[in-house]
Each structure stands twice: as C-alpha cells, then as structure tokens.
Length: 536
Image (cartoon, rainbow, N blue to C red; front, side, top):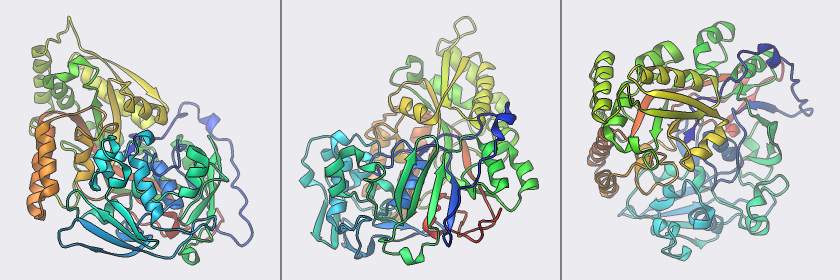
C-alpha cells in the first residue's frame, strides 16, 4: 500500500508557531476516548477507492472484511465465521456470522457480491482493482470485456458466499483482510452514489461508525452498537487528526492531547528515547522506500543505463545510518526481509560494489548514454512535503549532482503528490510500499504490466509477467517461492525502481494505551485498543 516516505515535519524553522496549546476534547462521563494522530487527511473513506495506508487505518475501523487482523496482525475470522476450500484450491466457501449494518439494515453475502463487482467496474476506476483479478474473470470484468455476472463471486444464500479464483492462492485469507475486499452497503451506495461516504450517510459494518469529518481538522467515529463484537470494544470515541507536523504532534503527545501518533521524525529518535522512552515504538516493517522513474514520458528513463546509474549512485548506508538513524536498513532489493513464503537472495547487480566504485560506474554509464558535463541529464524529483522526505531527497540530490546530474526538487502535499504519480505528472517520484498482506506478491504485483495506476514507472517486461503467472499456477510452495525470487531478480536487473531502504515502523503511543502490539505489517485496529486513564 502506498505511503509517503514520511508525513512528518513542516514547521521546524518556526517552532513558536507550532506550540499553541490545543486542548484535549472533553470525553463524555463514563466513556473511553482515544485521540489519534494519523498523519494526513483521508482523500476518501470508500473501501473500494482508498489508496494510502492512513486512509486504510480509518476505513478498517469502520469496515470489516471476511477476515481481519488480530492485535499482532495475524489473520482471524472477520465477517466469516469459517470457510472451506475445494481440493483444487479454486473454490472457497465462506459462512457469514449473523450481523447488521450500522443503520440496522440486514447484512448479507450480497453486500460482498456488490462490493467486488463495484471495485472492478471500469467506471469506479479503482487503483486497487488489480488485486481482485484473483477472482475468476476479474481482469476481464475490469477491462469491460466481460459482464459483472461472470465474476467469480456469488451469494449461495444470505449467509453463504462463494469465491471462485483464477488460480490457487493459499494467501487468500490474508488478502481478504484488505479494504479492497470489504463489503459495501448496496442500499446506501445506490441511494447516495459516491456521496454515501459522507457523515450521516456512511453505513458501516465494523467496530465504529462515522460521526463527522472536518477536512484539515479531524475525523470522528463512535462505537457501533450493532457491531457483532461490540461488547468487547473498549474505546467509545476516536478522533483521528491529520498530523503532518510530527514535531508538533510529539509535543501534543507529551501534553496528553494525543494518545497515539503514527509516526515521528526519524532523526529525533535519540531525543525521544530520552524524553519519552515509554512512548517510543519502533519495529522493522514489511515496507520498502524507493524511487520510481517515469519511463512513459521521460525519454532518458527508457535507457536502463540511466536508471542504473541513478540507482547505484545513491549512498544508502549514509541515508539509513547517518541521516534517518531509526533502524532503517539499506535496500538493494524490493521485497523486505521477513516476508513469508519467499526465497531470499535477489539483489541489484551492483550491490557488492563499494560506493566509490558505484559512483565511478554511474559516471561511465551516463557518458555512454550521452550525458556529459557539457550535456548533463536534467531531472526533477517530486515528493511529499515532509521534513524527513526533504532531507532524504536532498541527500539523493547531492549524490546525483556528484555524478554530473542537474537535479531539482519539488514538494507537494502528500495527496497531491500521489495524485500526480497516478497521472504520471512526475519525472522521479519518492514513495514507499507497505505490504497489503504478508506474501511477496504484494510487492511484486506492483510491477506487473497489468497493475495500472500504482505501477508508477510503467514497468513492462513480458518475462517478468510470465514468471509471476507461473508462480500463480505453481502448487508447490517452495517452487513458487523460487519463481517469485527469479521474477524479482529480473525486475532488479532491469532497474525498474531504485530501492532505498527497508522501512521502520515508528509511532508514539502513550503508556496508558493498552492493546497496541508492534508488528511488521503495522496493523493496529482500534477495536483491540483501550485507554486506562485519560489523565496526562
């Protein structure tokens, strides 16, 4: 799942402007309230249209799929109490628990049928439609080459859902916890259209229901009394705040105005461990920070020598160990260590070279491609407007200037930056990918030619696609892992992206918050959280 490399600090040079006291909202007597710093404003709360991890954090508190995540991110039953799989692994039958929507409307298997057809409808234009290609005829439906009735999903009865797959997928339970597979309230969507996500119209089936959504201020939810497990949900009200200024959010944590903030400025970790050691949470993530090259519109990036020169000339050790300093690991591959069902080993061809050797080779490659001091390569990096990202891009800019590249930087608000990436309105883009589920295909699918919007660099290699297709058909887990590993090596040899580092999850969680379990996928559903005391 896409995420800005960091959504952090915007006023480090004007600290006085960031210190205005914001009072913690009063919590109703006898209730438990959680003040939650969530980095950015959501662009949407529509499960079939969301794109970024911080949108998903709210949506996954409002909605629930067939499966869901336990506190440690392991997969547990959600709306499905149990399921069976056919011997060939192609047909899955899910038995739903009795439930209703937050407005009291009956919840049935048809709500999943409607949602899965909706995400694949061409007019929905979902950036995540490719995930649902796993269903029989999913890609054909999304491309308008088959009708929605041909999709491999049907309601056998109100409480029984059948999914038919294009190929066996033992990781399906993990995938079904992703918001793209969440149900949609047909009665609300058909009444309100895209406006069904607005307060007063939003209908949810998860632990919470939407109360208000004030752009630039907060999203407020309250406990959904009709949620099937409402008796075990502790927190009664949550306010999610956009906290793109991480230093200001840090102070709000100290003052007790926020209970959680989902990030902190990476290079402040030493100070934070001194000032609030009980709040600092770090954990190596299933996520990779990387750069994308616009190969569709920038002629220079069609040349693999240029992409290789730019990638290998970046000093990843300096970035991870000296600049960011929170435990990030230099990345010479795309799939992070610790990913399940994988055969590790793929690396860029030049990973074994010293940084000095890599920069020397980069200069030679640029010269071979026709870029010299007299005719330098001129490019612009577009990124999200955060302090960590700016520091990172300035380091990349310095490395590229040292090999003779004329580099400029431009920053946008994160939602605007990612909209530009989707529209290919960029030359080089900075981003990170967080695993949607714990399997290498969540990373490798991103570079398939059929993926569309999130394949930001438009990487297209039939050999790569063929290896992923072969892995889909391979029933043996070890052989499948080998095929996926070979595919990643092809992509790395093609210099499709420039991996930078493996991400570290960073959060500030006040000690009075219970139920937060550090995990590599960084899933923390609010239904598992509680607040022992509202005192600061």
